[in-house]
Amino acid sequence: MSTVLHTAECSLTRRRATVWVFLSLLSAVTTGRSESNRSFWCPHATLRESLHGLIRSTVRPIQVFHGAGRERVGLIDTQSTHSNDPRALEFLAAKVERFWSDDQPKQEGVLVSGLYAATDPVIARGFGAPGDEWVLLVIEIAPATRLLDLRLPRGEASRFELPESMQSELRQAGCEVRFPLMLFTSPQPSCMSIARQLIRDLTIDALIVPLPRAPLAGCADRPEGELLLVSTKLLARANIFLLERRPPKDQRGLLERSLVNGIFAQAYAAGSHQTKPWPLNGRELPSERIVSWMRQYLLGCGERSEDLEPVADCR
Image (cartoon, rainbow, N blue to C red; front, top):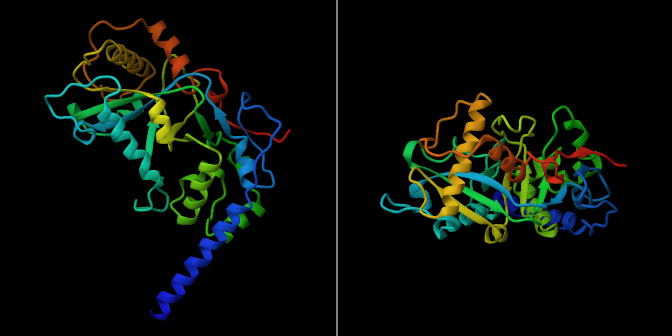
């Protein structure tokens, strides 16, 4: 073995050992705060304990949305879609597994691979395939889903910075980050190793990351946020609806399509210029029903703990 290769291999071994030591120091969490309260950031002795305040267990079903192409999902032109289509579940599960794979390319400044799901279908329209090849996967997440909220409220990012002592420990493990969000979205291998172990230890189903959302007339003050789903168990508990240019054949699918049409109408009323997913004509649901549904099912539209951005609070 060459001297260069031997040196690199030794360096990698030392780094892996440092990561293992760092993870072994992450103690179990006990906290006096109830998860029914608003999520909060308060640095403690360990990273795991600090992150515990940012975890919320959902109290109602939430719908999130993922845009894709027909062929990628496994559809051919003669096939129709229906609720809980096994092809949709297989496609989404493969996306989740990309987060856990070391084979995915990693680039500095680019979010890690995985299953990203928007909090409204309008934002999801910009991803997937163009025109009639686009399909919308609606994922209805069951209650008691554990979310780790990594959003940084506007103007308050500095209050969510990791303490210097914690940053120093992470640097020694080969992970250069300043905020909790960066730990879970960094392409650095050491960061990914630590993040994955934390997700396992804290039994996290999805991360809330600060990505855009569409303006909606009936929910004007909704904060930004998108979900990065990291658990296939979450998908197994979810209802999944696969919508496309042709109407579904089952009644629940037809209802979901009408609701999506109504959300697009809310976005256009708020000034959005996003391309329509399909002709939005036909019998539409009343606007007041759409708004009521959004407040129940769209993340950020209600007033429950999972709807609110985290705060920096050590009281």
